[in-house]
Amino acid sequence: MKKLLFSILFLSSVYFAEAQVRFGFKAGPNISFNRIDSEAENTDFGTEGVGLRFQLGPVFDIEFKENHYFSTGLIFTAKRASFTADSLGIVYSEDYNPQYLQVPLTLKLFTEEIGLDKKLYFQFGGTVDFNTNDEGDPDNIVTSFRFIDLNSLLAIGLEYGIGINTKLFGGVIYQRGLLNTINTSIYEDSFNLRTDYVGLEIGVIF
Image 1 (cartoon, rainbow, N blue to C red):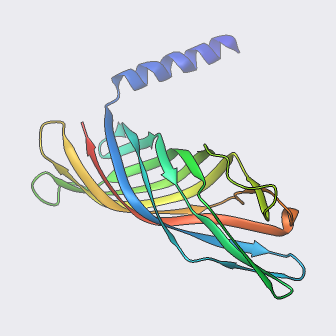
Image 2 (cartoon, helix red, strand yellow; image 1 turned 90 degrees about the horizontal axis):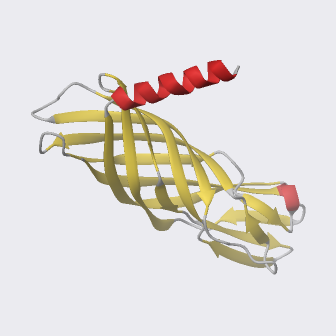
């Protein structure tokens, strides 16, 4: 078993050493909004609009076939968690700003050139998000948020070469929350909140 594990690690290290790895950096604004699922008695929950947030961080594209990449990174992502709760005619409103370090686990596919040094890209997969700030309040409805969140991801954009290895890219990205982001609340499991966002991404590949 140890020999098999060592062989897998060795072959993986050789593969990634020979694979083309592209490093870059991206940033962009996003519009963050929420989905609520509640079974709480005597309380009606509603979403509280949308919020302008942002994300930024390094990205890594690992080529495994021509125009086919495994794309990951370490992206700082700010989100919005906001809702109203109408309990027997008394309305409460809470607004939080959970922040995450996001690790994308995605495939990025490129077309052939559609113009001089221009390619379209399509990216899809998921992300694992790690909460970095302590949102929630013991005196509020939401007392804490989960440490880990999972999202599905879909993006489309254009990459433009401006040098031998330097490329600019820009696109539209959508992420849909898969987990209830709330860890503890006074309503326990009867109140779930998921965070989604639509945004722009602009970056450079070196």
